[in-house]
Image (tube, helix red, strand yellow):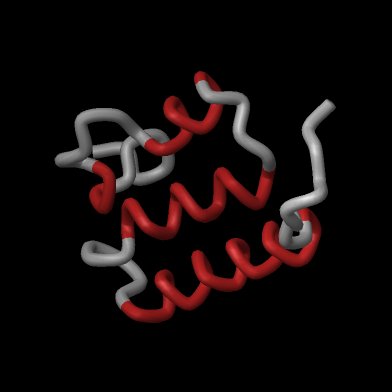
Length: 73
């Protein structure tokens, strides 16, 4: 098995995170959330969840919390 092209922690996934990330045009931070959430049980455990949380926190900080008066126009 090629551990670079087909890592074992994604072996049983219906779709590899990289394919999902590319097809959905996710940002770097969003892609890392997908990656770490997908593999946490088979590779990094709780540390991967903490990494995913860190990227979620970055997204929240960058985007801010919209208020009722914010519009998307």
